[in-house]
Amino acid sequence: MRASQRFKFISLSITWAWFGIFVLAPIVLIGITSILTQNEISIVSTPLTIQSFYDTLTGGYAPIFLYSLLIAATTTLLCLLIGYPFAFIITRASNRFRPLMLMLLMIPFWVSSLIRAYAMVIMLKAQGLINIALIYLGIIYKPLHLLYTDFAVMSGLLYNLLPFMVLPLYANLAKLDHTLIEAAQDLGATRWQTFKGVILPHSIPGIISGVILVFLPAMTLFYIPEFLGGAKTLLIGNLIQHEFLVIGNWPKGAAASVILMLITLLLLIPYWKSQPKPTRAKS
Amino acid sequence: MIKRLFSLLLIVLSTNAFAQKSQINIYCWGNYIPKEILRKFEAETGIHVNLSEYDSNSVLYIKLKTVPKSYYDVIFPSSSYVTRMKNEHLIRKLDHSKLPNIKNINNALLQHSVDPMMDYSIPYFWGTTGIIVNDKYHNPKNITSWQALWLPKYKNQLLILDDMQEVFSMAFSVLGYPLNDTDPDHIKQAYELLRKLLPNIKLFRTDAAQEAFIGEDATIGMGWNGDMFRSMRHNPHIKFIFPKNPLTFWIDCTAIPINSPNPEGAYKFVNFLMRPDIAAEIAIREGYSSPNSAAIKLMPKTMRESKTLNPPESVINRMVIQKDLGKARLIYGKYWERLKLGL
Image (cartoon, rainbow over all chains, first blue to last red; front, side, top):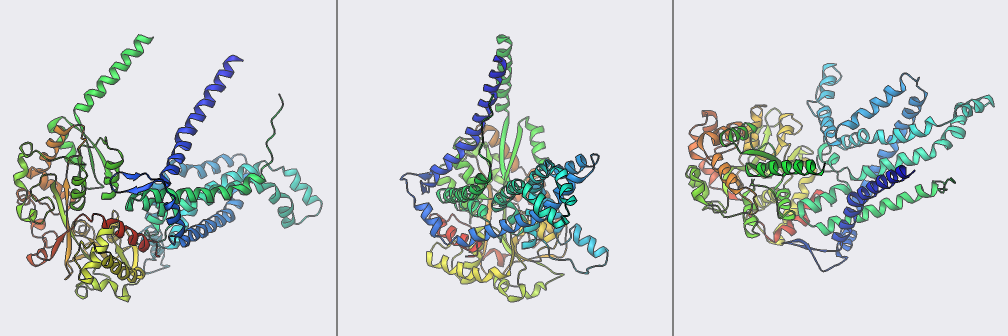
């Protein structure tokens, strides 16, 4: 008993220490930076002010926030449309193939997403794999302009984020009791009715987790528009990076980060509401 | 047990202290110094070299600024940032007695420098910004000035450097203002002119501009002469044009940060880079114009006679060195952001 309690204490402390140092402290630092004043010599200094928030909110950045939300929403919708049948097929695969399919889905995660963005460049560029293949097959004569377009940005986001939609959906759909589907079919439900009445309601928590995991990163993966979109179609993430690294206005970059975090929290509210209230198991 | 741990700790600490003595940390532009040169330096001096890379002066500057006890021994800032770093005491005054090879550096070029006596910085490479075209797609003869980039026929085709100062200098050049202009009204006019260029811009890029031109994802745009000399080796259709307008040029320098942990090693390295055979090898591998007159003599004819690397007198006469923008940087930044975000 004592040993297990000590183990519990140690593992929990490590978790909290990790959380405190790598999650909480940076957020607090960003919060503090956002209310400081920009300074030429020391980067930031007192007096404390909310000027940066005022500048960010009134600086005409609304189009970027709206554009980011639009891009993120489109990416999420496409991920859901592709990811849902994807996850469903994996759950229906035979025991022999299921681990293999999951493994194939996970392998790209072993490589940094930055490197995967570069891989997309190799695919899409004028003398890239897609154009070479199409020309070789005689389908086109002149290379298509795929790279540095909105299409490239969208496919980059889709490629990077699809697994984040598939995995929670898979975890959810795998738990689905197949006797329920059989029961629905026995009772004369059509395929669509079975899906709408049985499968879909059961997978709502999976859909919500997937949407959150895809929607939020889609607004901030700043290197995707930079590498694949030619640094023209910009997201909120690019605005933050620009303020910090190009202009050197840290308070404003921090203020934009805080605003993004607040938007995120707002979007998480429906998720919390949808979760059943946690109840402590009696021992 | 404790004893054993203690001795282990001692060993770790002592090797660390030993390592600090005989290593230097280089912070350089990406792909700007050949690894072979670093290995050669290590073989000759026994000093181990660690290399980190950055892709813009502002990243280098912020790194030095936010980590005052930075552990870099040699950095490669551009001329415009040398002044800024000197003024903010980020780099140290150089002791020329430790740099005997300094005699090899070309004096003619230094007249234009922001640091003509090489008190704080030593030229490493220099270059200028001009127009790049691929002659398979466009006739280079029709493009003689920056103004050509605004022609409607180049819609969604241009590669523009993702570099605030370069892009504003180009606009000033078209407007007839000084290339390092700091007048807020002129900056605004430049921004308005650049907004008209936006529909023609396909991408903003600096570090991968070569790739885009070689792979013909971009067939017209702006670029650095050294970058393009290197690209021509891979794609002979690439042509570099010196526009008829005034041109900016820059000198990328070596400098030693004020807090360098191993200044002696840093001096040895900077001096090594100026040795004629080494400077020549670097220039041949990287393809940029070298400021080292002794090294130029050792280069192959193709490099010594290349118009791209050695602009003719008429071009040199209209070149202006890139300077520190001072406080105007904030105004530039404001408009650059609006431009990039399409506002």
